[in-house]
Length: 145
Image 1 (tube, rainbow, N blue to C red):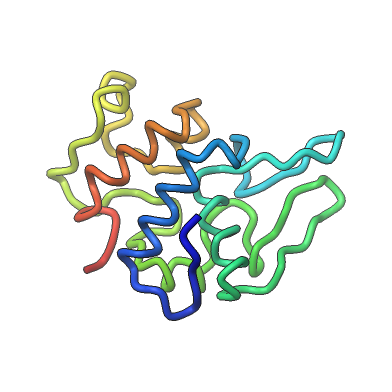
Image 2: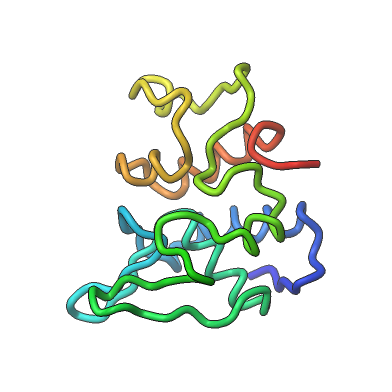
């Protein structure tokens, strides 16, 4: 795994995020950045994986878990907190592309999700490796330079 710090470049953060999404280390969940199952197993949204990397890089403090087993990162449970958004140079807290010329991977387009966010793709059941491919193919509309 790529080691990150508070001062890591946006490019390095993206590389680490893509690696994490395709590593098999994170189990996919829906609706929240991160939630624990009744058995205590972690489930992550693709954006929650980025939050976990931010915790490991000490960009944000360790998250808190609420009474519904929802994990809260820097005050947010359903979208990226501003601290993570700024660190990763992502344009939008839900991973929505900010460009009308946005072109996603074929699976995205065929589901009618052309203008949706990474969070929406995640919640629609698009798997992490496909989301990673979409991120890589569309860095210009998802991230600041």
